[in-house]
Image (cartoon, rainbow, N blue to C red):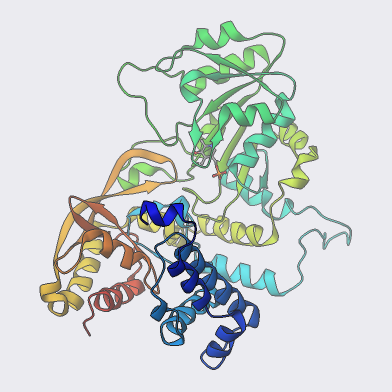
Length: 475
Ligand SMILES: *Cc1c(COP(=O)(O)O)cnc(C)c1O
């Protein structure tokens, strides 16, 4: 818009354009015959479009008058209505190679868990009904025995997620008291879950000990007062301190806690039940090992390395867990029946040596490179000729990530299909993949789009192929 137009207020041309904007009812009449959608969606689409046109005209960037016609606006309206009718919650193809991707739903559930979800969703259940006594039961009892058997803990309970688990533990054991934490472990775990802030919410006072890179047992010991309620260890989920570092071994922390009769709590975060070295990853203590080391309470997520639904698992000594169970906050953080059903199914798979490996998160970690390579070849075979001049394509060696804050700097050797479009910019290509009917999310590296095939399911390969053909307009 030129200066002169601005100073004159709305120019004649703008006024004329505003007058040319069709009325809501007029648009509704145009579109009625074209779409079968709930009236509310159609109306909202019309209003949005007209408001957009108005704003655009007022800002000086508006359409030409001849664009405010039925012919131009109807296709745009159809698009908007279609977007409103389509589900907001959609499946995407995760080609990032990050197995536990928080933004894409973390762990995938095995079929056994899906059966549990369907059943419990469509039938009444014994969620809080004790079938032996006929009296009210506790929902926690549905998984507690399995959880204890798996982890070796005396008792356990489950809540909405691990952040809730940490909050509940602190609120129960440390409200109004002091909690000692190593300075190097005051972590923030995505989505603004920060240990110091959770601590504040729980009414506990944080006592930081040590330096960022090094903390010694004597630092903990020196900080113990009559007000100390617990010693907290937090797993360094999404980062590493490397170089001149020192952490107090868990066993020493446990001995110190015993000596002073102060409980030791370990927020494991990812919390694996299996030894990760079998996947070629660095050794991380399993939940069982941490319990065996004598830690009083352990918290971990249900949907990270465990491979189950979103949940926060709390296991440990019966005396302490009983106190946690009685906390009224529990009611607000409680787990729902779907999660319990899925969790029980996943727990049961862990007892079955043959089936354990089919838990998708574990299966994806264990997947050999040659299997991933075959998958990549299936994709390139399908589309290489078709895409021909449109896109350079090759299979390249990459590293997948476990994700979910587990082992941040370790990769799993993998294969990706590397795509370099010739007929469009990489950013546009990325856009088109993301906005496809089944969105495909890859990662851009060295001017190429990489589709890591570790996290692309076998039956998704054909969808990826179709999407690529669709994007480049080839059949
Ligand atoms: C992931 C994580 C949390 C939060 O767990 P959610 O299940 O996402 O609520 C807390 N602590 C640690 C150490 C974590 O890694």
